[in-house]
Image (tube, rainbow, N blue to C red):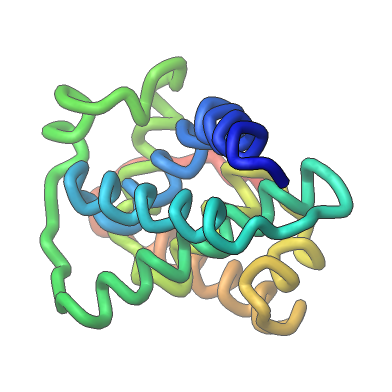
Length: 171
């Protein structure tokens, strides 16, 4: 690919996928600056590797997988598990734009899940991928995806009970 075409492709990819990747990474890292670093690394890898994709869905899944791996590496190596209250996040970032109160309440419970559970919940419930697609993106078995979803739902139910709230079930 010619450098000019490669630059144009990168610009189009950033414009098309940066918002979704930002939201996913922000839910994992909880820090805007760290997310920007991860996104930059993701798009650098895209630019340098110049992968060929079968479809736009394949490209999107690849970008999500790379960004999630970068998030996981970031958490592992920097051992940053900073907790930021969701209401502070809402004031500074547009992650919850267009969501109603129930959806924001549900998101606050997802916010507190550990990485493994959070990653499957984001892909399955928020991004709408099937169990099979989530297993392919995260490179885990379908039964592992189902088990993580089950554990996440259980943790969320327990958190809801502790707070005395009601949460509708999307399953």
